[in-house]
Length: 237
Length: 196
Image (tube, rainbow over all chains, first blue to last red):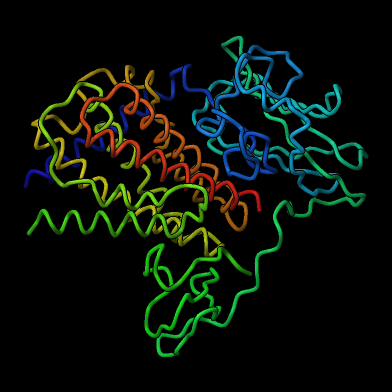
């Protein structure tokens, strides 16, 4: 009985809370997730020893106008360090940049730069962005390894959010899907509840590849726990 | 018996979340989850209460988002992860509710919601945003869903780190440590999914 009363209250409170947060200027945060920006590379563990950025890749905030990957602020200098050999994403001439936003603050512009030259700008006119933001940007015939600096300029603060994206640009047009990761491993045959599997056997189940660690029969992959018989080898295709 | 069941369910859900995290670099957070009791010691401060209340407020709007992802994503791994997260969050919601009730604290803060925003806050994730997402189809849906979910999960990390710094109750701080580690493991996997 008690829970029946509290749940509606919770719903109301959540709506009220999101209303207040939506208008709170302290909560404008975000970064480019695809192709992965440098902070996204750190947060997903593809680049190690990044420091505090792994806790808050959305917080690369600094006054507007910088051309540095960390926005010229006092934090996250690792993002400026080109000696880190940042992984690149292979793309064509047209690239769709998509963002993770942890709050959607009124926006003046989104800008994209390569080597100090602005190659694209999207003017939101001070509006609140949609929950999902992505921009299609043409790289203007550039090829090879380039670093794109993305800037999200907030309308009513002095600050912007910064994200550098390292790309390997092929010659072709179009917009092929990013290929930053090695192709997914091949799926094995579908798991069968009645089959006997021995150590090393590979099966697919729910779109993922699983390897048996020892003899097993009738144990469903994904239900045996981290130290159980089926080891998750990731998505497969 | 009821206490035992709650602990068991919580541990199982945590195992499920870990199994999909694919994070090789962290210690198994399921260990920390299994140690979390269904009841909580009495001594606590205002941050402990606020953290628990805000975790409830964090999970509540995520349920609709996760349900949409579970039913509509084109990729099987995205659907699977959405289902696992929904289960884990529902279980955690029950545990947290029990802790707050045992303290006699409200499940919803009596303080101004705006004050919470300064301590990590929550992204705006309401019916309107979920409805907009529902209109997107195909592979674009997967990208949009993952980006919204990542943004939402960053909020949980911020809350957990607030509790780790300013909380008092050891059990609530253990929950915060668990939340920090498991949520960042989820974010690692979600970012890899959205990148490829």
